Length: 176
Ligand SMILES: [Zn+2]
Image (cartoon, rainbow, N blue to C red):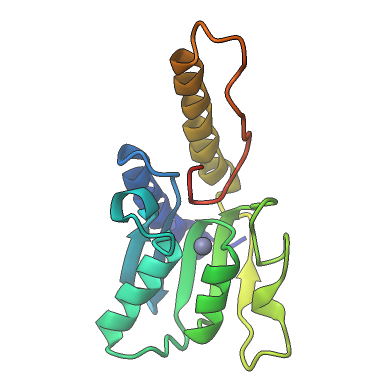
C-alpha cells in the first residue's frame, strides 16, 4: 500500500461523510489527475431520486466536465467502496488508469467480487485495481450507517411482533 493512495482516500472518505449526513448510504469518491482532484461525488440516489447517482458516477461526470473531455486517461478514481457494474463500466468507458477502493462489496461489487468488469480483456480498456486502502475506515462508516438504520427500523416496529428486514453489511448505494 502506498501513502499516496491513503492521502487521496481521505478525500473520498470526506465525501462519504457528506452522504452519511444527508441520510444516504455513505459512499464517497474523488477523481485525481496528477496531484489535483478534478471531480468529487458522494452517493445521492435518494436526494436526486436517481438510481445512477452513485458517488463514482458523479465524480467521473464532474471530472469530465473539468477536463472538457470524456477521456480521463491517466486519472485515478478513489472510492470508499468497491464499484458496482455501472460504475466499473463507466470507469472503463472513461479510460481511467486506476481505481483505488476501500471496502469490498460482496453483494454488488464488480471489480473482483461478483464480476471483474475492469479486468475484462474483451473490452478495449482495462483499469488497474488497488483494493483495501483504508478498508477499516471505509467499512466502519457503512457499518455504522446500517446499524443506525436497523435501530431506526426496530424503533419504528416497536410493538410489532415481526422484526424488520435486515441487510447487514449491504454495500449497495440504494436503500431498499
Ligand atoms: Zn455504482
